[in-house]
Amino acid sequence: MDREHESPIAWMIKDVAAMEQCGEEIGKVIAEPGLVALVGPMGAGKTHFAKGFSRGLGYNGEVSSPTFALVQEYFGGRWPIFHFDFYRITSAAEVLAIGWDDYLDQQGVLLVEWADLFPELWPQNHRLVRIEVCGPTRNILYQNIYQNIVRPRL
Image (cartoon, rainbow, N blue to C red; front, side, top):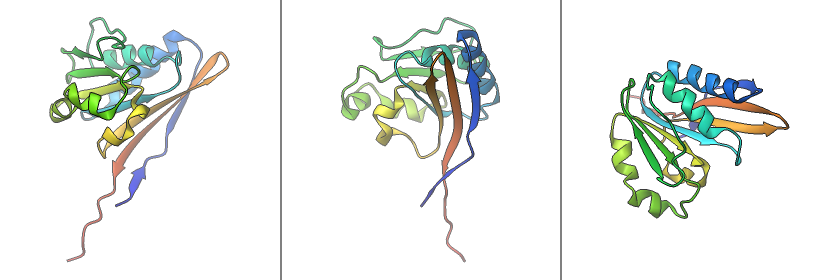
């Protein structure tokens, strides 16, 4: 089976407000729950994106970085949001130990900062948000990735 990728959608972000607005716009158009992998260097704006994204899903509460809690749970939007931060986690086994598979089984959005540390744990179908730092601006690339299922001919 081959992975199939839609063409990425790109934004150039100039400030924190624009980062949150971009996240909100993407959150509004998400059609189904699943993994949203946030990838980018330290200070790129992943948590600011997460704040806007959560608003776009209809969650109006406080959103903070889960760096020390590892996961924050937000309820009240279209789906539950499970906001992870893998930065301090050292192995895939540690991610599994905090209940990763249980979270995947729920009908929620797994919004994961530093998701690129453990790509082997990503489900086949997911969304990728790559944030690139370009001097004072940020470039965001958003892409849906899904498994191309090849059906046998009958």
